[in-house]
Image (cartoon, rainbow over all chains, first blue to last red; front, side, top):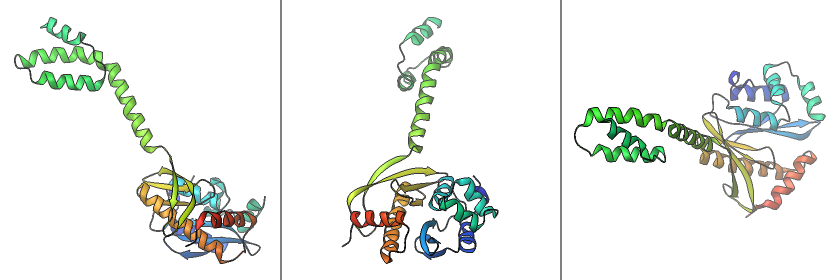
Length: 90
Length: 155
């Protein structure tokens, strides 16, 4: 788990850039990942937290339908949107 | 002096708490303080080792219990009520807390348990509002939508 390497801004940025998630700003940031135009996964990115605690990190991974190690890869870059779609479509 | 010490040490010490209260009582005794207390203390300490171990064990267990996940039943959201209670797990999450729904993947976090539950209440409502916007969701989400529609009293 590489939660110490990333902060909430990184997660939001990757979500927006790589997965084209549009976040709505409420108490926290919430956004939907659309698979073939259908809302398939919803992620919550907590506001106002610099570091990401371990359980929050794994909860965000779970929301995206990823294992923690795949979530690490998503944030680190090797995991592309295409690969992500492949994982959640299984 | 030795006899005094032996007598003192042979008293049954049930727990560390007993020992502490006995120490308090003995504090009120007068002379000769220094020498007797030194001998008695070293002998008593020997007897106390298992009790201290138990005490430490208990304290560790108390700490463990404090960090342990707890399940609560949520009956109210931020502005809405629920028809049936919703199971929520609250856990320590590094320096803060995380509250998450058992039935689907949703969480709220905060600096303490109450803050985490409040954040989760908000998140459940936020999800509900997202879901009632339209029907453009996967089957999994449509099921959650139906579940929440039945659960939340929309007044």
